[in-house]
Image 1 (cartoon, rainbow, N blue to C red):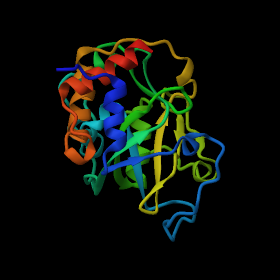
Image 2 (image 1 turned 90 degrees about the vertical axis):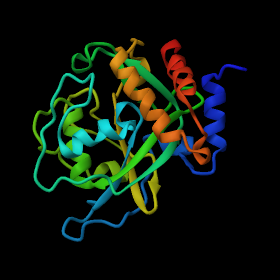
Image 3 (image 1 turned 60 degrees about the vertical axis):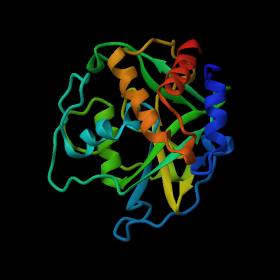
Length: 242
């Protein structure tokens, strides 16, 4: 049996019929974004967005602690709940262009690197999952991923839909990116502004396990590439070798 490589894994996903593929031109930060249906009370503010996750938030159990509160095994942090919380109303498997980076040192995961998206890096692609959430929920995730301890959201940067990028605060994930749209609603994600120059650092076993489980959960279906645990580990090993 031939062992999978990151290249063969990504080729399989790229050919799968139920995967949303983002074109490289949409991942750059100089494009004008099309108009989206918005909140009538707040022009330029979409009511719903697709948050594109490519790290630990691939795993539903982990992502939902942001929406509902709680903790997942291996994560040394309890996230607050709140009134009016709700789960994502949709999810899709996504293939982003560029490169996955594992870098920096995350104390909340017991040390070790965490995932960043380098959209312009020379690579075969990045496996991701888009969650359909309310705009306010996405902004809470941005706030919490950048060190926030409550459910206060980051400010809504209208320019991210006009130019494809905006910076919020000074956290690791302060660079917001909008690499296109899905079903008429914007795709949004975040990364480090210098993702392409960060030194590679191996993740903790807990973090790597959560990401691997999220990859399998997202791409296990035949229409999404039929990925298994060995495929997930091959994909992550390639990120560590970059």
